[in-house]
Amino acid sequence: MSVESNNQAVYRTAESVSPKHPDKICDQISDAILDAYLAKDPQARVAIEACGGHGALFLTGEVSSSELVDVKQIARRLAGDVEIIERIARQSPEIAQGVDAGGAGDQGVMIGYACTETPELLPLEYALARALNRFLYEKWPYDGKTQVTTYDGQIAAIVASFQNAPHDELAVAVRQWFAQQKYVAGDFDGISLHINPAGDWQIGGFAADAGLTGRKLAVDNYGPRIPLGGGAFSGKDATKVDRSGAYMARRVAVDYLKKFAAQEVLVRLAYAIGHDQPVEATAVVDGVEKPIAGYDLSPAGIIDKLQLARPQYEPTARYGHFGNGFAWDK
Image (cartoon, rainbow, N blue to C red; front, side, top):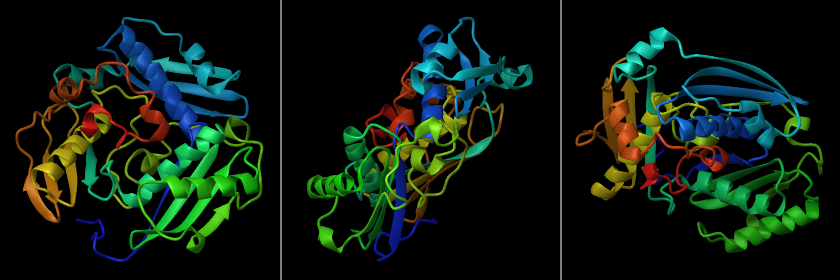
């Protein structure tokens, strides 16, 4: 297993970005469009990518559905008054034939993970960075990023950069968060703080930078300590195992963590396009590999078990796909 031992005193760092970060805006647009199709047609095949910035948004991908959705209206709800260029086609018939037969919509390796470091069963540094970001976003609902470094289970450094947040007020808010957070104790005055380190800023979101669906994969998953497997989740219906396989891998990891009273579990599921069963299904429980049994790991089986054919995805694109109480976290 390529994850550091929980007993090691090591530095670990993870970041989080706010829902108004340009990449997250694109993720939310992709998933909002997916939700709109699924609300009308649970069997819709959807793979939508968004790229935006500086007054323009490009929507592309594939949709196969008997229903129509106003994708531009959805995009403007999240992106504002921008020029929209749309290039959306139907799913390739060569891909569709394999999916129609119940097979995976693509090849790939999906990773699931769970550990006992936090109540959400997530890595400590990742949970800290995300919790801080949420706290600050409630005060300043704009573009923003946080980053937390831990050493031996304690916070060693914090980076917080938020649009429209004056330095001194942001510093006070970070201290307030530390006093209320539930993950670690320790002395706040010993933490290395970097508050708006490039200076206070008022230009953010699409006005400051470009965004792209699927560009915050470590934020969407478990942070940089845990290896990444497949591609992005957002904008993809659950016949794409990039999404459904990753969700099922998390579910198995959570189940095995409890079943074996383990400290951490990493799950690997690997698929071949057009085939309904994984070519690998492995759980690594506290460093020991175990086969995965007792689950229907076909795309159809996963969709049924986790109820993935219903609209529910826009919220997943805001603050990560795991540890937020979704069906695959339980």
